[in-house]
Image 1 (cartoon, one colour):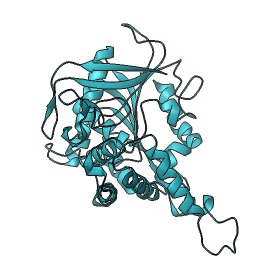
Image 2 (cartoon, rainbow, N blue to C red; image 1 turned 135 degrees about the vertical axis):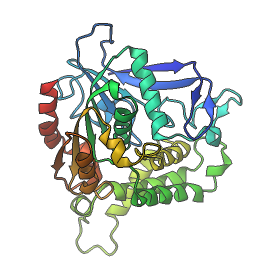
Image 3 (cartoon, helix red, strand yellow; image 1 turned 90 degrees about the vertical axis):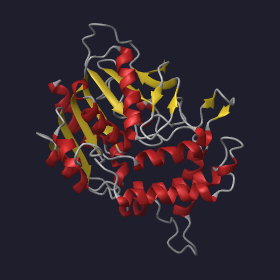
Image 4 (tube, rainbow, N blue to C red; image 1 turned 90 degrees about the horizontal axis):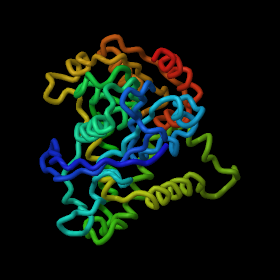
Length: 342
């Protein structure tokens, strides 16, 4: 896939208030550009919290030449979320008024703002209809919202490991991560994008516990020496993963994206979540993961029960929420029949 970008010169109004006079949106697309009258089916992927817009990077078993989501056969698009540090406008972007990153001067971002930015890219590319949209986690938030906000744009949708409204359980995790960032005294200094780095490492450690499972940790992080005095392998893993994220992400983008997660509510201003889901016109497939305690299966079943004609599937994994990244063989069995019907 190739990296591309779109700069909208129209004023962008944010749902929570504030606006930007120009908006930069980075995205990846299939190498062969989209042209009027193109016969390829369009697959739109919405990425998760700390991923980027290149699904070949974080979902290599599923996306790429010759893979199930074949970037040569289909026109595949993935847009980098607003507030992410991978190119789209966000707190780490340069504020033209100061010549420095926005930090906390960037408007608060909601899921609906992210969807509006995606929709700008769709129109910029000249795509009339997305044949299938696929989203997991916060990517699933986007996919759900898009089918409601712009129903004419989506024919089929797959919602994986996600929900129609943020739960208190998820918000508690988000607040724990924000508290970790805010406990780092460098976070509020805004002297550089390395501010809050120690807090970000801790926040990532908290997140990993929510993404994985009891079985997953016990099967991969058990001590090599059963007689060791102090267990340390899982500790080392947590610190390694914290540093790994801090090397590629910044604390300000992470803080903003955690807030965006807490904005998720498909029913806001639409009567109720049930009414909003009942308005969806796309053909929907919902996928849950049996060990996911961040978005447990009942949340996926709720989606399927309230979206007209939706189908529900459940995959089995020892790796909790992250199963949508790892259980590609099971996902292929669910997605291939949908793709074959396009």
